[in-house]
Image (cartoon, rainbow, N blue to C red; front, side):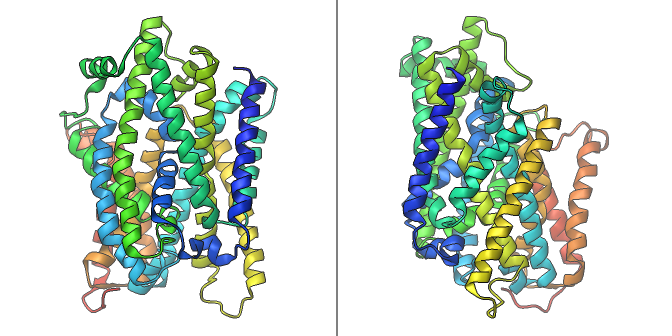
Length: 487
């Protein structure tokens, strides 16, 4: 597939996104931007969240990682399912009962101002890095297969994508993203299914042949029984559970879509439906990964690129013909936009509400709020660009592994803060909370780098997130007193 044709596909998809934006952003105001006027349909939110949760990381990293980890990632996916039920029946009732726009306002009501600001800061840190990683993996493919051939620098390619995302989220915010995410989910799932069908044809597999071949291969191994390994089943399962709770339930980007539903019942239906579908979709991505490795083994093609992330794009764009390349590009572009659009909106919303105090400053006019919101929106776009460019210079591993590694450190304090507030009725010495939330990830880092020496060869996996949360919880408990009422 020629670079010009790839660019045409990107252009057509972008025009479609802007058409949806024009329709949904009409008469939008700050309430539309932050919470979609609490009028979003639950089934639209649930469907759109599939694409927002998967992004380009799942689209390329999960199939490529099958060669190294087989289907062990599915252990985490099963853990996600349990985590989403905690979100639906523990966290969402709190957010709706308190009528929150920023979920970190809960920490202010329950623990104090410093706890509130600390929670919002760790969200901004986490989401900035996470969104940058997700967008990087997509833009990097387009850079390698299109823009390198034209001599366009990577920073310019990334800047153009971020400017496009900035443009269509600038006014409508959540009200727009709920619908653009649904469009992007449709194209991503279409690309996934068509890619599986096409590669099965190349391998002369029917549906039953595909399932048999995968089941009989070493790639289909799901559970890992060696407790030393990072992918040991309890580590992956419970790590996945708490990653879902932290990266969805304690994340303003994901939750602002849920709290844009009319009521708690619709929001819960959204989360439960979305979580069940996500299990199936992730399994299909793993099957795609196995099929890709079957194909390169059959054709004698060496594993391409510096990392396994390059497997799917290389095979789709260079070995399977124009139709495969077209399916891949459709899915790739569908993965690109939700990697950053919701993040930009959520980061802007959190900074405006949690640090600029939009909800508290009744004297501030709507015009001034809108002007400040747009400035903040642009600043975060620039920050995403900077992180992506730096990450490209230093990354040499599958992005999905990097993403979860960072999440183990940055989401742990949020996990500890929220569950201390929910599970206890104790108050804290609020002034010292930021120190506790900085020390906990630092201690986790030292545990992680010394685990094999200190713990008989033990390697931390995603359970490090839980350890981080427990250290934060323990530090808060040491600062606490049994006199505060619960929030």
